[in-house]
Length: 124
Image (tube, rainbow, N blue to C red; front, top):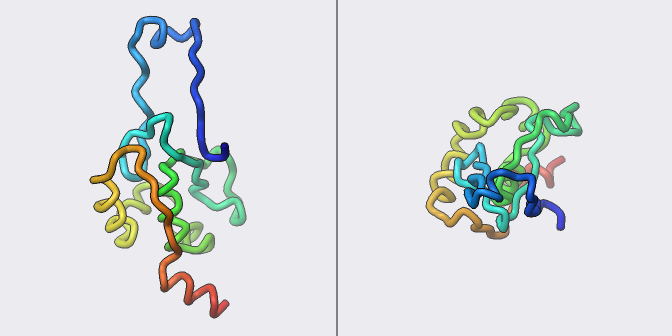
């Protein structure tokens, strides 16, 4: 499935052999763990359409990734939201983060484009 990453058991993995599983990676945006069962995806800090590369990506919860693209165009992301700290301090994303941090680590819900973004797309 797209956006899901599975981790297979390996006898060569000292954490799995010792019974001490590795901690789940954390979403750099909301700072909640991303468990294997959670939906996640890679976010290009500089959008590919604006010259971003795979090296400039971060793994986010799918809901966090969707929240970014529901609020901002590729051009706006490339212009002023090209790092995690800029995203975190943006008022719209900060409000979303305050809400999502209270949800379970594997929480996902459909994300709709904001009214402002829909209106700006109709004008273009």
